Picture 1 (tube, rainbow, N blue to C red):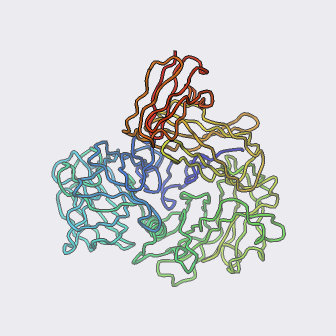
Picture 2 (cartoon, rainbow, N blue to C red):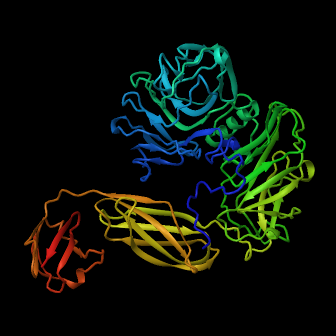
Amino acid sequence: MKRLILSIVFLTFSFCLFAQTGPGGIGANNGTSNLILWLDANSGTFSDAGITLCINGGSLQQWNDMSGYNNHSTQTIVARQPTWNTSILNGSPAVNFSSSSQNYILHQITTNPSTSDYCFFAVFNSSTIGQNNLLQQANGTGLGRTHFILNGSTPASSFIGGVTQSSTINYAASSWAISGTNYDANGAASSISFYQDGSFGGNVGSITPESATGNWITGVNKNLSAQWLDADVTEIIFFNSLLNDAQLIIIQNYLAAKYGLSLTVNDIYDEDNAGNGNYDYDVAGIGRVDASNIHNDAQGTGIVRILNPTELGDDEFLIWGHDNGVQQAIETTDVPASVQARFDRTWRVSERNAANTSNVNVGAIDMLWDLNGLGPVTASDLRLLIDTDNDGLFNDETTISGATDLGGGIFEFASVPGGAAGIRNNRRFTLGTINPSQTPLPIELVYFNATLENELTVKLEWQTASEINNGFFTIERSKNGLDWEEVSKIDGAGNSTALLSYSTIDENPYWGISYYRLKQTDFDGQFEYSDIRSVTIKQNTAEVVIYPNPANNQITIQANEQELQGIKIFNTIGQDVTNLTKQLSKTDNSVIIDLSNLANGIYKVKTVTTANIVYKQ
């Protein structure tokens, strides 16, 4: 099944080290760029130290950094942990900070504003207005570098070095905002620029920065004593350098599209609007404000990278996103005659300027597709499809061929035309194949879930959209996320392009937390693992008495009638050996079981809600 995708949210980018794979295509999320902290409530939120994913309304201990530097944000004090909630903004989850609970998290970054520039953006909804702390650095003197949400009557949004900075930004209670600062550390002339919902909110200069090197914080001031935050936060992005004006515009368009928010100015990308089809996903862009403010290479979190525009002029942008269709060549009807199948997923572009008042054409572009994890690919089979008449259909279009295999799963269509013949404002594009057998373009693992079924058993379910040379699946279980044992083995389909669903039951999970992972093994012995899932079984306090223990040939179990309705016995490797035993007698509150056919050893005896160890000798 070459090969199992480890994460169905973010693909692994294995080519072109300098590709702009950060938010909106700004910075690289590979641990080599100026993007040093990227927190997204859609991914990497854990109730423990990075193993158990948060559940709705549950506490958050670790929020994983997606920048590539692994600067994971944490809160190990249980009483101070914020909560994670699903479907808060445009279908996305959010992390909630409560001032009454005094929630906060520590970010493992130590950028010193006395010596380093920085830029950060956050998307949040403050339920109360006051000196609430969105981001600050600890271990300084005075107020430190901080971003406060201030009283609505005060036209300011931030404190630097103990000085209230005047700006035109005002926050309203219970109103979502895209807020950011671009801080220039230039000695005594340091300055900070404020941004909110696309607007430039003012610039303050001649700041004497405070020197400090402690961890940055969200939720409280540097002394952990005041300015508690009341807010839902969906995303935090931090660069240890300035962003140029084009990058600032692109990143705010990315956030607005993703979270369904409006920009007051510079609303370049409008394919996220319902009337244009809600192309909200993996938004990224290139653009130019002037000769000093350019961004001409971007990929973002998706598989499409666009670079090298030939005619990118002042105040011109090209921003794209997709409709979240299936990233697999399953569409066989709406295709040109030479194409056998195409991605169900389609992309759409906005090619506009700040006011959308001129005919923008960024010229020809190079388009790279990261097809890692999508099965075998022959470059000559690939076809780029562009909806040039903008009717929403591809079956009446002329295809673009000539893809080049750059290695590492990357395929390039060079010099894709702009203007009437190619990529243009509001047009859609997608990828097709003329040979699905040779180049199937599959997405393999759709999901893998583990759920508690009846307080004592766990149901394991997964689905594949395609399988290539798939020998079998193995369900593995662990107590600690480190040491694994096999639970069951399920045959694979070998080769398939249909959606296939699988399930099995673990009848012997651990008390407390059980961790599960799916191992997929090819015919040639190569294998891959899925993401880890976990379930928790709590020990019931129902009184169960088993005697004698150790036992010879029989045991008596005393409990209430309901507790005795389901009795099972398992050996040390989890096999159900109940059929080798016999109930000799049963009353409303006791059962006598014959164990004479069992070998001497250790057994687990399960009633409806409890499990007990019995020694047979």
